[in-house]
Image 1 (cartoon, one colour):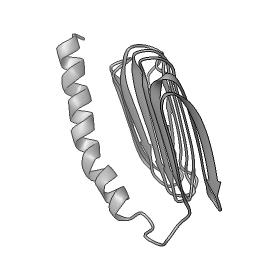
Image 2 (image 1 turned 90 degrees about the horizontal axis):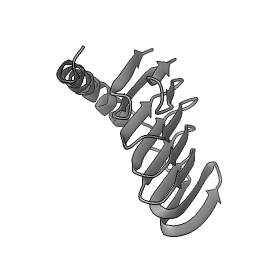
Image 3 (image 1 turned 90 degrees about the vertical axis):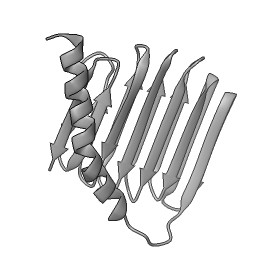
Length: 164
C-alpha cells in the first residue's frame, strides 16, 4: 500500500471519528468539578491536586501541559517536544514526548484511559470515552478497546477506532 492510500485512510478515519468525539464532549458531565492545571514550558516541573483532580507535568526544554478536571493527567516533554494530557470526569490521561514528537492524550469519563507516547518525529492523539482504553506506543499501531475511543498516530501512519 502506498503512502497516499495510507494518508487517505487516516484522513477518512479522522473525519469519521469527529462526530463521535463531538458527541462525547457534548454529553460530558457539566457539574462543578475539581480542576487542576499544570503547565510546564521550557525547563520546569509542576504538580497539583484538588479533591478528585490531579495533574503533573515536567519538561526539559520542551513544553508539557496537564489538566485534571475531576481526573488524573500527567505530561512529560523532552527537549523540542510537546506533550498534552487532559483528563475529565474520572479519566486518566498520560502523555510522554521524546524529542520532535507531540503526543496528546484526552480521557473523558469514568474508567477512560489514554496513554500516548512519542518516540519518533510526529504528532499523535488519543481520545477515550467512558470505559475505553486507548494506547499509542509510537512503534506499533495504536489500540482502542472498551468504550468509544479513537487514536491517530502520524509516527506509524496508523489509527484505531472503538465504538464500544
